Image 1 (cartoon, rainbow, N blue to C red):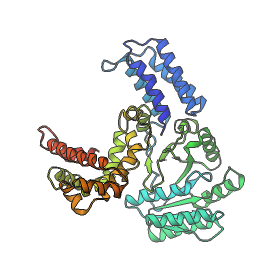
Image 2: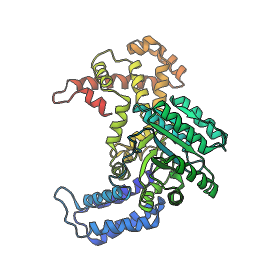
Image 3: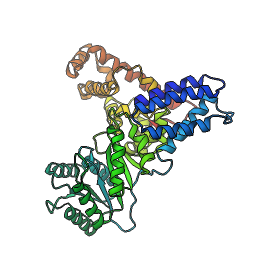
Image 4: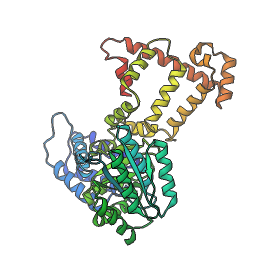
Length: 446
């Protein structure tokens, strides 16, 4: 996500950090490079111009705080402006829940933007909070979209309204009526999409809005389309009236310009971002956290929130106790790996760690961490129950058998065994170290 932009900005600011004093020429040279980096990331040119003007006004002649060097002060100013550009504190990441349920959320967007998948992700997210949800498949002209939403709804345990057929307004009306009868909290309307905006689509969306009066109208936009996403948002906002935006496919090779441009140009807050295909791969958008990610500062808060969704306090305490004894086995280790993978792809998780961008620059294959976990799981899966619980019984012959069953080599199996034993020793040492807050706190922070 925005990796190329992050790398370039880090490189630019690295030059500034080494300077004792910055003059206007230094700032102008740095901002020229920032301008090129933003334009290459497909940020709207007017947004770039206003952004750099604001930074220059704040950076030139500003008194440097005692705790910061001049270079760090410029980075701080850039962070503040990035945060402001993407919405400041206004993007809370949650649709407005009505005091008189059900809350009606209407999703709009073009075909191929990931709207149907996003409807299911949104339903999954609110279901995890204990809400009751109804999905409405309001795209009767495209049967595949209806079938897809029904299948996704079944997967996450949420009912989908599909009838009356060939009547988008009727489907939405029935979904809302059914939700009221069932005392549901939320109705998500997955409306029709087109390859391009046309009058027939807008007329249908206006009809749905006029009859059902949704509390939220969220545009689902593909972040990989760059400035086209901004123009589309302007058109939908003008014709339908948007209350928020969900940007999808931010886990791909998107240059990311839409993230920085769309709020500034349209005035509409980004509420969620899609970071994968799984139901849980939708997270609230926080401008301050995104600004930190872009500048290579990481996003530890989001990382902790994801960990808390997967690991309960009781699980963290239990894992800590296991690490301190000989009871921790390869079976427990495999369970921990699976729990970590539930938090999302390792690439995204690493992106939340401060300085991770610099660490990953030396890795030729960005998928290496994910493949490494897959390899470890394969090796553990090739062990017998006794071997997983008592690694000490694994001799040379067993290593060859495990390697053959997992598609690895005996050397790789041997390396995993050594790493496992070393890690157990380290964790025992940490758990006994004075002044530590406890191993459970360490596990909770991972």
